[in-house]
Image (cartoon, rainbow, N blue to C red; front, side, top):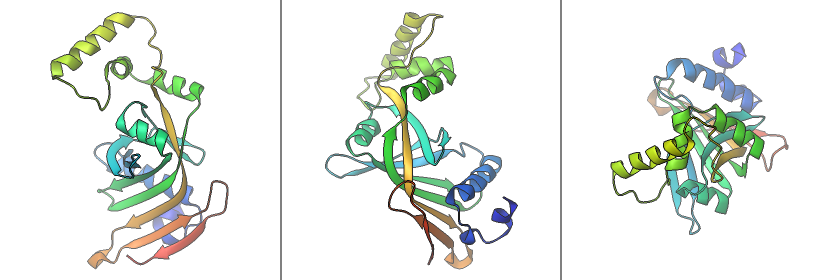
Length: 204
């Protein structure tokens, strides 16, 4: 793997190996949330939306994150199962763009991850009507208290409206800052999952 960091990254043939090297470096250099990514979706009218989410991990070639399916992004992902994601690591002056098809993780995978979350986060998943109007902070705190009392010290199951999504990429682009805006860029494209990648270096 060392050759990826010391040599010309635009010559790398495997986008996932390159992603992992850059991601590992970001985990040592970014002060907060190296796994944060801007997730872009579109609504039924084709109007785009972007927001920051946290990458939970990779499952094979897929990029996995979790959310409330009744939220704006959840509804958009279910209605238009395609998405783009952007990692920007300012400390490294690098970014990675991902575009691909979206699918839902298995029930077992969602259950396992939900139970790994802190207890207060599990209660919050039940209390928050994500993306819907909220009259006050007190109303949110009251909803959390109601759910905490409901579950007590018992098991907190995964809400039926909370699950994981996976992005299966057909496009990955790696960008590194260069002097005088002469940046380095390399893009990997494929028609669908499982097909070979076509790699090209791009003008900055």
